Length: 521
Image 1 (tube, rainbow, N blue to C red):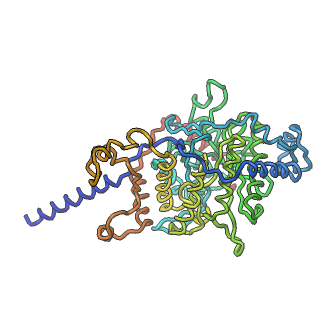
Image 2: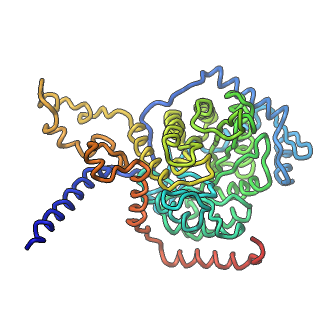
Image 3: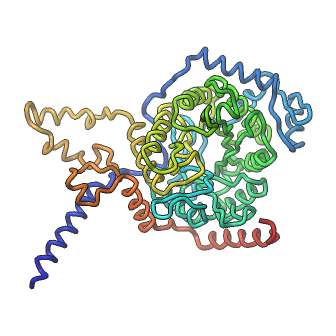
């Protein structure tokens, strides 16, 4: 009998915790992508944008771009009317722009294996994808360590269950426990198996790009070909980086050719650290970025007119004292705003931004530097946002706690980009009539009807009293995020995948892996 009151208190305590969890749970109807309802912030006037465009044309015409170790591409440019000397290609003024504007789509759909998850890229649409390319991972329990395929799968699952991410991403971390020449199979398969959101393909070798395309054909089966056009549907978007300054290497161009020929989207992005890979000025970085991107995007249209392409800009700065990359500073934001406007003038989708930071851990530096990148990203009108979640240490590390903290911020950006609700409910005149002067709105009909969805509810922020916060362990944001990602993985349920398709994918992967010599790692 003595245990009964204690048990009763325990049940009541659990009930209170359940109610608190229900109140704290975000009430959000997941959308496949964001359709922005607010204006874009325009930083540079038309005269300034025209000046940068003229300067980019001058770079292409007078200096040119190197396309290394690829005679086929050099021959394509020569036949298109460019001046080709060894590996250097100089372009008649306006050639690249014309090739792009004549055939590259202004918007396109990247199809997901679950059609409800397909995304529109371009126009007023914004797509959030996780960070990309980190060889290390970090969490509060294990600290910083090399990433494994288990980590890769975890981040695919986290991106899948997050309602604020629309895309599974690509190399969400680099699984260094697998051989370099074979790991792309496991990475692409993880996106296909553990998520039904769109994903990115492998670009580290042309054969790996071809493997991605072959696996996509298996995954989509009879739905791979668009019956209206007879062309393959665009089912993957892949990152093609320029080797700045003013060069493309054989690996990137080889992957570009594979994807463009297969009608898959190429995200052509000069990767620039100003002061090392481009001039130190905002206008100089924008000029070089535009020139490099124009050359890469135009090449996709030479290879396959109409193939979808995205103009990418990744521009940050370096410390003039140490040479280390810096993030979240004002100058890259200025480049971002400028490049977004230039992409709109060109008429192609734009990629940039993310939650970038130089911080080693998910701390205050990580928070404010990431916010200083994500806010311009959303205000500028970026269409495809790579590195939305998880980025630490200048991209060297993918953070578990940082991932869910950034996803929370992405949720807030959904609300910001939705703009002001001017419907009858949004105007709330009936609420003012009901309450009148000198009373409160807590119990009025309008509040009762809207309280679950009225405001964005962070799953991580603590807004309770200090007494309650202390009673619950006095956890800081990173500790709460640690609990959050673990719960997300524990609750994860895989999307259904046709067993026959899964078997075919596994068979393809097994055959291809067996074709590699064991010594080739």
